[in-house]
Amino acid sequence: MMGDVQEYFIERQVRNFYSVSISGYHIAEAGANPITQLAFTLANGFTIVEYYLARGMKIDDFAPNLSFFFSNGMDPEYAVIGRVARRIWARALRDLYDGGPRSQMLKYHVQTSGRSLHAREIAFNDIRTTLQALYALFDNCNSLHTNAYDEASPRRPRRACGGRWRFSWSSTASSA
Image (cartoon, rainbow, N blue to C red):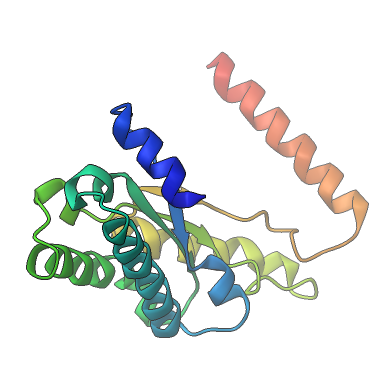
């Protein structure tokens, strides 16, 4: 089905639409370290490339519309995961698949790690998330999602307070 969707986009020259997001987030959340997450995610990306090529699609018709999705944590490797992924992807697309400059550009989204947040140390979750967000921003991610500080807590009052705070802040920010 993915191949059919991609062929549809190519035939109708749909641009700036990411037909597939190649995800490593779930791999990391299941316990993989940053290097394993990166290896499996890129392997999945190359598998999709091979599949599309086997269906007769041209690399420069679909590769610019692939995107990636990584988890981020506090391990030092997360500070460079995007740069490493971009270098590997660019070289492979150039040298193995003869992809043009747009095809060589790896675009990726980062979500901070939900498994790094703790219900018992909830006061430190903002610090954990901020550090992870800084890693992603300094690594030049294309987009970023940060988890809520109380994501690890099942208690309703905390979520309700968090929701009110966000609403209050956004209301104040928009009126400024």
